[in-house]
Image (cartoon, rainbow, N blue to C red; front, side):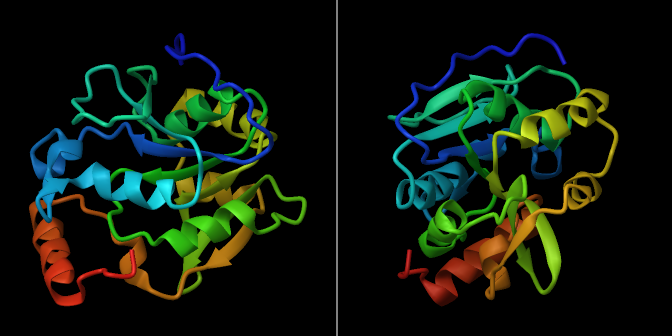
Length: 209
């Protein structure tokens, strides 16, 4: 995978570190996805806000060339350029935090709610290497808490960069946290998704955030 360009987070107990995954190219939305605006601010800022409502430390993992808006107080780690796979960001974060858990959320999931993030931080994984969000029975592996032991399980597959993320995480037999509102797990990947997100924002207001 190459050299991880990061430093370990200073241990402040056993609380998980909030990690935003921003390693995708964003080609389906025209590139620089983190800069795309929703509700007058960059898409990634919505995720920063949600994580800050539940964890003390918020970090972000991105490729070396990823363009980001100013994110005061957010530590940015640069993952290897290749392979291009979501597991690379998760493994990079686990390697960085020095034996702590990481609470991961993609940069393009603007409607995830603080109570869901808090539940993922605090619920027991019941001995499993991860606690992952589900909706309507479907595993959502980009939103969840990965325990330190997940690093050894995920790193070999991350190096290959070919396996389907959901299959890899499902094989770990993670604990699951059901999310009732599918809007929370809505990803903005295309211009059409962005239009829908703007409609959701206008119609619901998300005042519960």
